[in-house]
Amino acid sequence: MKLNLYLARCGTASRRKSAELVKAGRVSVNGKTVLVPSREVAGKDKVSVDGKRVVPEKFVYLAVNKPVGFTCTLKDPFAEKKVIDLVPRSLGRLYPVGRLDRDSEGLVILTNDGDFSQRLSHPSYGTEKEYLIVVAPPVSHKDAVLLKTGVICEGEQLSASEVIILKKETGRSTLRVILKEGKKREIRRMFGFLGRHVLTLRRVRIGNITLGKLEPGKYRFLSEEEIQSHSRMF
Image (cartoon, rainbow, N blue to C red; front, side, top):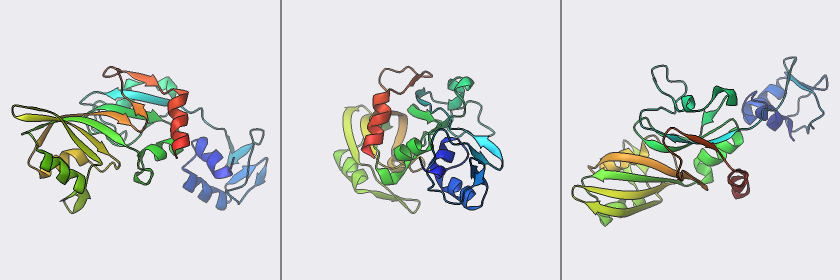
């Protein structure tokens, strides 16, 4: 394993910042300072940062069904309820993958594996996020096509990979929306551009990981298949 990746898996810093630590001469392997981030290290090697030994964290991967009212932003000092409060502290430092605003519900991934988080959330990987939403007033097929083509909202282009109308009722529509990006409040902004109000928004899938029958406020560990499928995908 390359040294900068080893440091990232120790929770020291991201891979890029870990590389900077190495180049700055702050990292040693078996008591000798190393200046090359790509230097290979093995499990038997003793790696230290600023003289303090570091060891890789055990990775944890959780799927959480976030209820409305919980925030994913861990640094918000005014948030009364955070998604991280739904899982035991004994699992260690975990961070949410991507965004899901306070008024939305559904699937959130919590992990301490930064590379895994990057693969699921960064737009360059094109990982699909699937949502079931209810909007009012109803939307037309013409509206759905427009959202796939893209709209300009607050100077930013917003578009969906798929917009499928599942059901039309009096005064509202139920839709399936698939995104490949994660811009801030993207779905609400897109439908707001059309003069529609999002009544409910629930994320049901991220890549190959689905919400399934997980109850609100509950969590489960990802299966090895779910973890490895994304490793193979990217």
